[in-house]
Every structure is written in structure tokens, then in C-alpha cells.
Length: 238
Image (cartoon, rainbow, N blue to C red; front, top):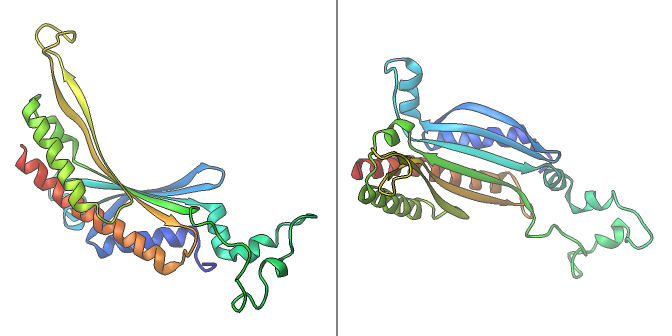
């Protein structure tokens, strides 16, 4: 993968989102720690994003997906130069040289002695799909309604997250004070923070442009479906 830089990888992700009919805004990139680089964007259905940015409607409230791509830059460099390149950086009395680790006739023999560990990740792609805050502000503190919303989100996550490695539903509650104050045990709770989280793993072993495109397309497809399904969940549980 020597022809790919982290910025080209980010562009590949944006291309996958466009392919699934999602438009993006608020692009960020930076470092979370010395060897970890992230690329983050907020995605909407492209037709709704066009309306928001045209000014035809002052406030269009639509579900969105916050996507974050995190790359291990050490793994990215390793993918670029391969195990042989990494081995060339090592020396020592007990470390075999490159020719011993990767014999020229390795295909005819048992193969190279070392390879990338299958559990090492090049990075992760995560998508957090959430409703607009206005949808939550309009909901009342109703226990039965909260349960319907939770069940609907769980079914939506299960239906749309088949390609993800991890699927989670997050619901935060806000306590509405009763006439007797916050300490009243009868005070009701309404949903104040809702999101459905999908995570996709990108293994280092076998990483190439095609594999990255496959993961990004799966993430974009999942985000697009979840945005549409979340709209239906809130319509049915209003």
C-alpha cells in the first residue's frame, strides 16, 4: 500500500459516502496521540444537505451520521513497506537478518518466518447515527413511549448493522422535575441523547486499496440505511 497516504485514504472514504447518496460537512482531522491520526466528518442525506445549504429552508432537522476514521500510523507505515521493510530496521545478536526471515525461495519452502499479526488493526471506522436535537426536545417524559423508542432503535440497529463488527444503541435520559421538585421519585425521564453506533475493523494483514474501499463502502452503506431507518423509528414512536 505504499501509494496511499492518510489523506488519500480520507478521500476514499468521502467517495464511498457520495456513492451512497450522503453529503458531508464539518471535516476535521488531527492526532489523538503520537501515532494515531483521525479524520472526522458529519454526513447527511445529500438531498437534505442541499436544502440546508441553499437557504430555502431556514432550519431543516434531519438525522445525521458522525463518521470517524482512526488510523494507526505505525501500522500504515508497516503496510507500506511490508514485513521485510520493517525487519530491515532491526538488528541484534539474536535477530535473524532479512534473508533468513524472508528467504528468496519462501514460496517453495514453508514460507517467510514472520508476517503481520492478524489481530493488529490498521485502523477503525466508526459511525454514530443520531436524530436532530429538536426531535428529542419534542418528546414527552412517557415511560411507554421511551420503551417503544428503545425497542425501535434496537430493531433498527440489528437490521442495518449486519456488516459492522460492533453495534451499540446509546440512550441518555433527562429528568423532568415535577411540581414537588427534582427529589420527587415520581419525576419522569425523557430521552435526551440518542445515537446508534457502528464500528468497522480494518486489519493490517492484507490491507490494500481494494480492502479499504470495501470497508468504507460497508460503512457508508450502513450509515445511509441507518439515517433513513432512524427517521422511520421516530415517526412510528412519536
